[in-house]
Image 1 (cartoon, rainbow, N blue to C red):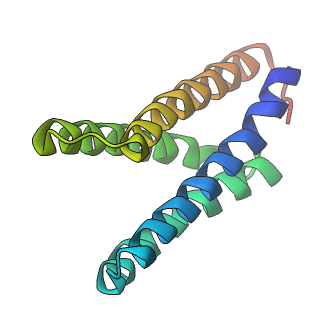
Image 2 (image 1 turned 60 degrees about the vertical axis):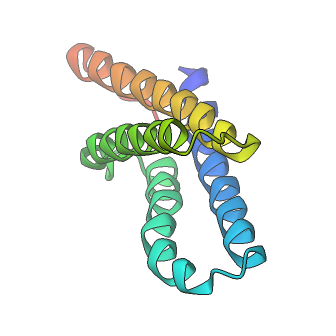
Image 3 (image 1 turned 120 degrees about the horizontal axis):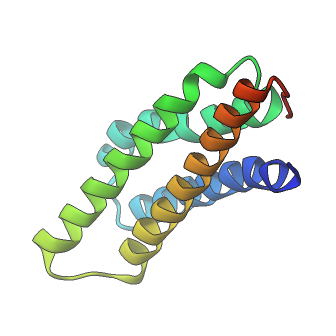
Length: 123
């Protein structure tokens, strides 16, 4: 399906943009200590989506991990927005972006399940 071919690089680009925004926010706020804690975990998601985009057959087992990370990110961001009572545009961007990327990952997952049932695989 050609839509799946568009969604895979789209997920990677979203994760890279999200990482750049997070890096800029922490650097401009002078919270370099927080950067050391958050950055290693935040780098894994763009790498995971990049590897899945480049070789989806090899990294198919990690699709469930991508779904789990997206769900955790949505719950954490939504909880932060509720607890802080001061929702910024960046919080809204992260929450809406994670919701849309979760929908894309679930769409890819559904396509993968259909292709394995019919025996047709597509990258």
